[in-house]
Structure formats: C-alpha cells, structure tokens
Length: 209
Ligand code: SF4
Image (cartoon, rainbow, N blue to C red; front, side, top):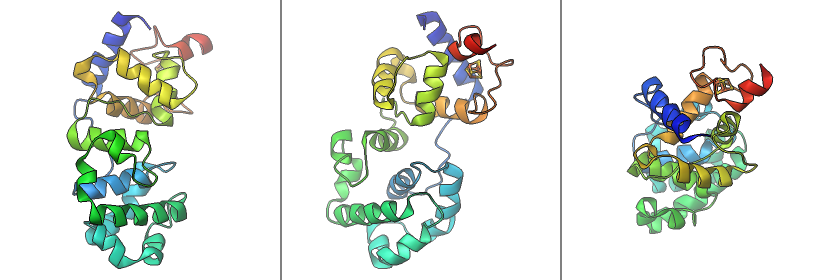
C-alpha cells in the first residue's frame, strides 16, 4: 500500500474510533492477563460474561490457587478450550505467586508464562503499559491482508511488518483500531464496502466488486 494511503487509513481510523481500547473488562493488571489468555479463540463478549462474576472473587494469583483447579475450570467452562486454559492459568498463577514482577516485565519474560505467546504478551504490554507494539490476532491479520496493508500468510509476519510500516505515533493504538474496524465495519461475512472510506485502495473490494 502507498504511504499516503497508509497515512490516510490511520488518520481515518483515529477519527472513527477516538476512544479505542480493549473491550475486555478487568479491574487490575492480573485480571487483564487472565482475560487475554481466556480470549484466545473466544469472543471478548463471551470472556466478559465469564469474568463478570469471576472477577468479583479473583483479584490475584492466590485467589485462583485457593479456589483450586477443579472449581476454576468449572467457572470458565463456557469458553472454548476451557480445560487447557484453566490448567495453564492455574500454572501461571503458581508462577506469579512466587514471581509477581513477571507481570510488569518485558515481552520476552512474559512469554515464559504458560500459554502466553508473543501475541498475548503484546496485547498485555500494549493495554497495560501502552507499549509501542502491534499484537496481531486472526482478525487483525485478516483485515490487514484484505486492505493489502500487508500481504502475508501468518499473523507473526503481519505483526512484524505492521510494526515497520505503521507510524510510531500510532503504534500503541493501531491494534485496537484494526480490531474495532474488523468487528464493526469490515466484518467477516458482511463488510460494509460501499460506505468504507478505504474502498478506493482496498484489495478485497477492488477484486470482488
Ligand atoms: S472496502 Fe470492504 S473489505 Fe475493504 S476494508 Fe473496507 S469494508 Fe473491508
């Protein structure tokens, strides 16, 4: 995509979503980490349904440990892959109970936690500390390729390229803008192409109209 189109894209996204932030609900850093881990392959809406009651009693790692793995697994049983997620969250809590500083450390250290890959680590660092990184899930990956902002096969490559082409001033917010744009405008089944401000340079639109 041409630089002028990239500039236009992010200027417009800023206008469209001036208060962009994660839609996951949480009260502290630890809860955000749990919510992000739970959100893999699950909608934020579904995670929020589960955490609405859970986060009234779970504020720190020891709360999960005291609850016990069985009870915790049951508490999150309405989300996808809940057994694996519960097991890894429990293991994460055992580590954080002894090493709480990991939660506020760098990306590399965060990824030493069970089931915390680079995408989760980037979301946590970005949301909590406004780190200038661009986390790429399947949605950000798909919308970036639809627009032809990048032309990649894997989310990791998309993240690497976006961090190169997105202006520094937008890096701490670009992830949220692209997620919201995918969720509410360029939706998987019914993208609103006719009213889209980007249809003049969108690859998907120009190939399918
Ligand atoms: S033109 Fe359509 S496919 Fe392209 S970015 Fe806009 S809504 Fe998405």
